Length: 389
Image (cartoon, rainbow, N blue to C red):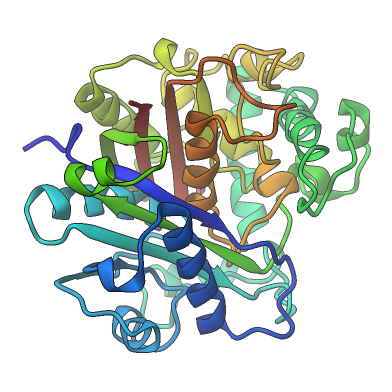
């Protein structure tokens, strides 16, 4: 069964805070849920499906359903890191198409900045019982050095340069200057990026995303509910997910799980990469964006460096406007899981509600794609394609 046209995104919300010293994790989830419901024109009583991931406190959907006072017919706590919430959009559409719920709420929230997490450079905790721990932890894997391995290999294999990667940050900064809530609003140059300190060779500090508190929420509903609301209609027309892992040692560090989730989502949607007007691409690091752009089919493998250079990702200038809110590189990265905010900005573009300075003209088709986990070891990939009706 295809989910094409079976569900709509009817409500979105991005929490305004970037540092939540005065808020609990559950409160951030609740405020995000309230904001998305108000955006949709729905109430808490309308929600009969709830989706969250590992950032939710306590017993996940059980604890949050209690805290939010939800009466549910369907719950989903799929956790694949930062790609969880893009997976949730697809799963919500599946549940609605199957009659398991009619209004699905998806929430994200986190406080890594307030809690002082050294995200990216601290040893990555995979859980003491994870099967990879005893083999990998002695080598000190951290988020930054595992992504740096991918960047180094891509450079070696395809001739990609630090200057080409820097253009991704430059594009994000051009967009973030128009976002009053973005953590980094100063426009930067390629020289600024390559002259910033090395964090994990070849990645510089400005190749890395911000660390922020915050959150967000999405409301997915069936066609009948969507038609009853006074909001622009954003239809889900394709969705797919895929893991990529060590594959018993047969690993090529230059590609991501998008090589599987992307084509499947495009096939379900019945569109091609060339049809896409706007792309929300998970940007934990600049190399993450470059590899996903290649793997989703926007250019040939190995040509991502040339594709992203010279402003090609800047709205109003380039062929593929991306992350017009500033993304994780400049705006926010709540709970170190940026997938949900990618869907939010894509919906803003499709509704015509993005900032006028970055609004993509005639934007009727958008993609949101995310990774969760580690690009260099194991991760989940998820793709959602949306259309303005």
